[in-house]
Length: 270
Image (cartoon, rainbow, N blue to C red; front, side):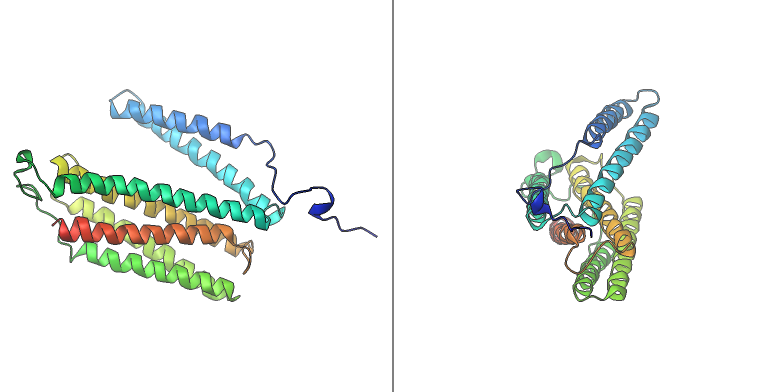
C-alpha cells in the first residue's frame, strides 16, 4: 500500500522554499526595455513606439508566466500553507499601504496649488480659462458604478464562503462589467473635457490623479478577471482563495481613493 507523505516528514518548517525561476530576471529586463523605450518615445526617437510595444508585451508575458507558476504552487502543489498565506497577506497589506502613500503624494500636489493658487494661476482655482467638469454628471455616475462594483464583489466573496458557486460567478460578472463601464465613461470624460494635461497646474494634477486611478481600475479589473477564470477552473474554494481576497482588498482600496478624488477634485475643486 502507498503511504501518504506529509510535509512534516520531509520539511521541518511550514514555509515554501521557492525553486529557482527565470521569471524575476526576465521581468527585470522587460521593465528595463519598457522604461528605456518609453523615454525614447517621449523624446521623439525613431521606432520608439515599436520598442514600447515590445517592452509592454514582454512585461505582460513574463508576469503572466510568473503568476502561472505561483498559482500552480498554491492551487495544485499545496505549497501555500497557513504560514505562507499569512506572509502573502502581509505582503498584500504592505503593497496597499505603499499605494496609499503614492496617492497621498498626488493629493498633496493637487492641494498645494488648489489651497493657495499663485499669481500665475490667476489667484483662483480652477484657474481662469479652465472650465471644470460638472461633478453631477459623469463623475457622479461613475461614483455610483464603482460603489456598485464594490458591493457586487463583496457579494461574490460571501457567496464563495457560503459555497454558492452561482452567486460567486454572478457577482464577479457584474463587477467586471461595471468596471468596464467605469473605464469607458472615464475615457469619454477625457475626450469631452475642454482642457488637457498641458493646461497648467490644474490640468496636470487633474489628469495625473484621475489617470493613475483609472490605471489602478484597469489593473484591479484584470486582477478580478484572473480570479474569475480561476473560479471557473475550480481552483478557488470556500477556505482557500487568497488571490481572490487580495483582489477584493485592492478593489476596495480603488473605491475609497475614488471617493476622495470625487469629493476633492470633482466637487470641491470645481
